[in-house]
Length: 109
Image 1 (spheres, helix red, strand yellow):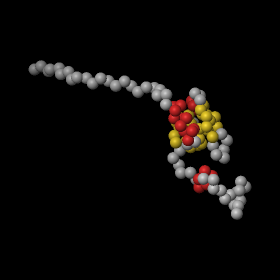
Image 2: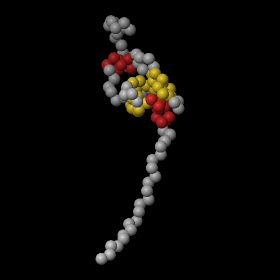
Image 3: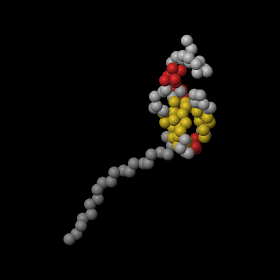
Image 4: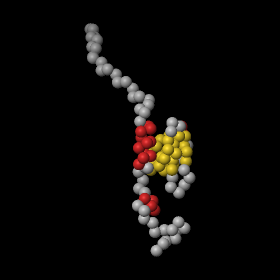
């Protein structure tokens, strides 16, 4: 009894995806232009939120409301994602130019 060797036509293998797509700068630029709030997760697990005001090959500048701005080296970043949390009522009022509170926390009439 003999076994026949069947050879099926092989599909050409796909090439692996590229290591670099060169879309990072384009994406960071669009986030900065729209002043889109992002969440930046650092390698140590800390998450900071703000909008990207500046970026270059090695770092980003994260501008935050009510907190100091940060320069973060890219090699310390795990990932950057658009912040999908709903803005707090206080932030919504600021963005719409509505404010009934003085800078000292007292209500104005």
